[in-house]
Each structure stands twice: as structure tokens, then as C-alpha cells.
Image (cartoon, rainbow, N blue to C red):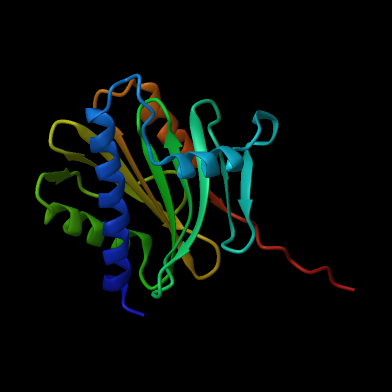
Length: 203
């Protein structure tokens, strides 16, 4: 498995998210942003009720807490031939912010993934990124921030996942979005955890 091919798909997903954020900047505040009616309907069906906002994926071994409110969760079940899965996308209806969770085979460490993503983004026109730095959410978690021109801001966090996996979290939002949007993104990132490994009972 080639980590560079996986990173290529990661860059595609991130640039797609940036494109959505750019469209949200251009959209009127009275317009719905974030996709077609079909996508919006699917997201509404996948929306978790406030009393049970914990989302669990047993297959890929992760859990997260949906922010609720104007945040919609859309299950995509997308998987590339290289084994990169994009199980969920969360969208903020009013600002156009978007969070993409990717689950990759652990063919590289989180810091290696983050460094390669940083280099890849810096090669894209208009992208400016910070350097990856350690985060407190896990022993291996690293993250960095980026901007696309004056209108789009974003953050990437890469951390250890379930056995044999790495979690890559990519977020974008318009720079004019209220402070609560990036704050909610950070809270959402911190809520993503690998599921605990169940130890079989001994007879």
C-alpha cells in the first residue's frame, strides 16, 4: 500500500471541502448552502436526535459526538480502492462549514500523514499552512491550520485510530463565520475516538 496514493485522496477530499467553503462565502446568507436537495434530505435523515448525539461506527472502529443545532451529519460509506474510507461528513447549514472524517490504513504514522498533507497543500495555489504540532487529544495526535486566500480557513487533525487505522479529520469554514464555528469544529475533533478494544472474558 502506497501512503502517497492515500495522501492524494486526502488532498482531493480537503480541496473539495475548500471548494464548498468558497461557495458558501459567495452565497447569500438567506440561501441554503452545502449541496443539492438530495444531499440535504439524506443529511436530515441521518441527523441524530439531541438526546442521542453519539455516533458509532463499529466497522471502522470510531465514535464521535454530533454538535446538533444547525450541524447535519451525512453518512457517505465512500471507500477508495486504496482503502481510504470517508464514512461521514458534517455540514453547518448556515455558515457552510464542513468537517470530513477519513479513516486510512495505518501505512504511515499520524505525524507522517500530517507532514505529507502539509507539503501537498503548500503545493496548491493559494494555500498557506502552519507546521504540524502535537495535540493533547492522544499520544500521537498532530494538527495544523491553513488558509485559502482571504476567505477560507481550515484545520486538519490526524490521530491514531482503531487497530490498523489512522483518523484524518479535515475542516473548512468561511473566514467570516462566527467564532462559535471553529470552536465547534475543535470540540467535534476532540470527540472523535477509536472504540475500546473488547477483551474476551476468560472462563
